[in-house]
Image 1 (cartoon, rainbow, N blue to C red):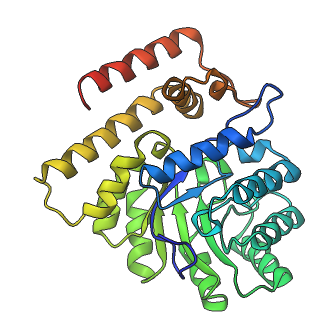
Image 2 (cartoon, rainbow, N blue to C red):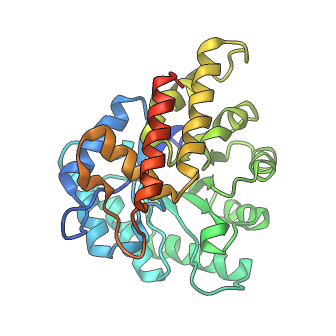
Length: 307
């Protein structure tokens, strides 16, 4: 599904970023991963987010990776890059750059370093970005991940942004894990795209009127998430839907037992045969050997059981 429409809908992978031996983003391997995810049924790639380690990369590294993806033939309307960072001017630079390569929809964290910031402060930051860019093409998906940013996106803030910029703020990625919050946003703001950040919540959220998901485990189970998105209206006793949901839940449980990004990268390394996929940029660390062994053993058991 194209993100060039007013509201992004579908399954978007919060894509991992492979690193080379110098711990820099590996452009060629990332493009190959994007192609794989799209072939598995993803509607788009939400690159340079939390799962993609984006806040460990410089502005130059982020813009170079985005340019590489577009240059190598991934359609800009299939990309949903993260552009929100702590510095207002860097957020503007990253968002302007995304627009310059043909991308109109971005995911934007609120400013997150200073704590105890009011809705007025967060509103001022978002408003400043929109005003300084002055580009009618721009569509922003808000990013609610308070466990990481410590800066929640309140309903009152959404209401205020929509009142002033109704064509710009088109949705929210809710990674809080709070299903009640997601459904409350769906109900309070009809037409506003609510995207689940937790894979198992895609199905129930769609049935409440949600728009889709941006999730980490889609690096592993994109095909199942795509099936759920296309069949969510089916009965719960539909064996295909039930099986896809069960695999999604098991995969999420698997990668949540230990550090999530390290687990995901280890499993992608196993799938691709490229050990380099396991690299993370400090301060993130590889799984300790006993945890890695257990992870791979459990993954093998799930695969053997057809789960």
